[in-house]
Amino acid sequence: WDSAWALHVWGFHEAKLDSESVRRRVADVERMVLEARSAVHPWRSAGSNLLGSLRRRRGSTYLRKLSAGLHP
Image 1 (cartoon, rainbow, N blue to C red):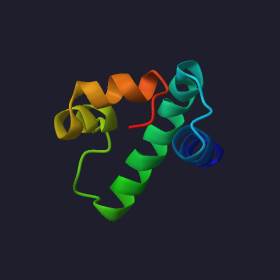
Image 2 (spheres, helix red, strand yellow):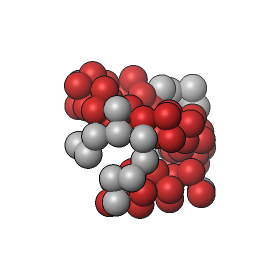
Image 3 (cartoon, rainbow, N blue to C red):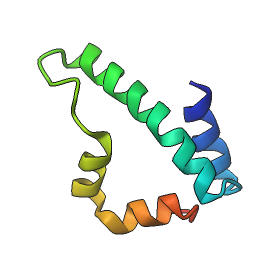
Image 4 (cartoon, rainbow, N blue to C red):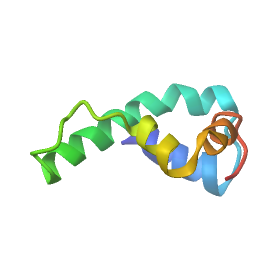
């Protein structure tokens, strides 16, 4: 939970995280989202890739900005 909170507050609201800080937290947040998704939608595969869905939804430009520490 700490990784998600830090990414949200320090990454998006305060824009103080560098790209390495974002990269370190992405795996933790992805694991939480997948666990929540499987609890809400048990018929979906728990192995769904959050980053893949973000790429499809927002495009790779969004992820490049996110990993570069730029505010989307």
